[in-house]
Length: 456
Image (cartoon, rainbow, N blue to C red; front, side):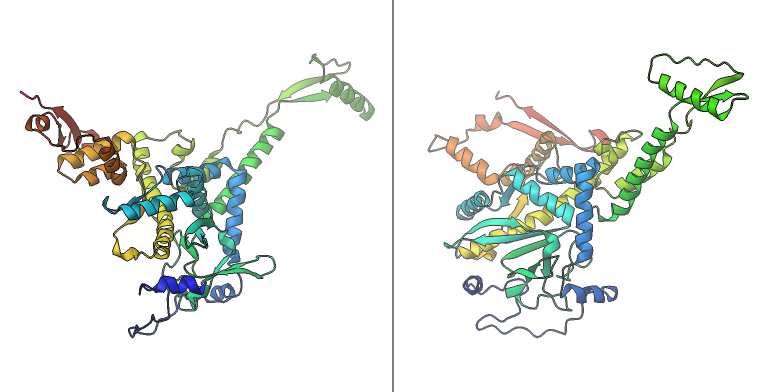
C-alpha cells in the first residue's frame, strides 16, 4: 500500500483529502476548520465513529424488499438505471491524444465498462443504496484490473468532527453489521465513494440518500390499503341469500341449512320450503368501486419518483402536454445521475494514468455517458445539423449527434484511400446546405431544413 501511495505522490500532486505535506512542500496556513455535522447529528456522528450507519442500512434493506415485492419500485429502479447508461461511456478529449484514448479503451475493457450489464448494476446500486463505493483492484504489473461495487451499508468513512478524513491511508473501513468487527480497511485511492444527494456534500462522512427513501412510509400505506381492498372484495362482494322460515325450530333450521349448503355444489339453485317463509337475495357492497384513497396514495408515491406515473403504466387522465413537461424533469434527474456515476469512473481512470506514470492534470479530459437527456436519434441528428448550420467545429457536431469524435475520425481516415485528398469547388457546391428556421416547429422551437444545391 505504501508503494502505491508513494507512486501517487511522486509527481508532486496532492491526493484528495491528503493532510501530509509532500517532499519539499510547505502547506499554506489556513484558519481553523469547524465541525461539519449539524447539531442534531452530533450523537449520530459519535456512533458512526464506532459502527456503520444503521439508519442507512435499515433504509437500504427496506428498498431492497420493496424492489423484490413491488413491480412498480422495480420498474422505477430499472428504468432509471437503463436510461442513465444508454449509449455507454466515452472519453471527451482531443482526438490527437491517441495514447490517452488507447489507455481508456484498455481500461474500459478490463473493467467491463463496455458491457451494459456492469453499468446497469452500478447504476441500480447507486439509485437503490444512494451510494456507490467502488474498490479498485490493482495487479502486480501496476494496472487497475477491476472496479468492484461494494455494499454501501457496510462501508464506514473514517472522518473527524471537521468532516475530513483523519488519515488518507485509512479512509474507509468495511464493517460486519452483525458483530461490529472490522473486515477490511481501504486507503483513499483504493476505494472511491460517490453519493447521491447527501445532506452535506462537504462532510465526507455524510452518506448519500437512496432515491426512494422518502416514499417508504407511503409505500407501506399503499400496499396495506390495496390488500385491505382485496380482502373487502372477497368478504363483501359475493351475492348472498337470506332464508326466512317462519315458525321453524332450531332443529328444522339446522336441517334446512345443511341441505341447502350441500345443494350449493350442484348446478341446481332452486329452494323448496314446506313452511311459510321466503328466500331473498342480498346484494354485495355497492361501494367497492370507490378507491379514491388508493388513488391518492398512488399519486403521493409517484410524487417522489423521478418520472410521472404515466411512464410506468398509469396513463389514465394524463394530459400529453403535461407529460412532455414532466419528462423534461425526468431527464434532468437522469443527467444528475449520469454525472454522479461517471465521476466514479473518472477517478478510477485518473488512478490508472498515475500508475502508468502519466500526470492526469496535464490533459483536459472527462469521462461521460454518450447520450444525454435520452434524446431520440432524430433529435440528436437535428441538434447536430443545427450546430453545423451555425459553423460549429466538427468534433462538436459529432458529440451532439451522440458519436465519439475520435472514433469517427479514425473511421474516416481508414476509409480514405486518396493520399492527397482535396475538395474541388464543384464538389463543395454539391454539399448539402443546412439552414435553421426559428419558430417553425412545435412549441416555437427551431426547425432544420437540408437542401442540396445544384452544380450548375
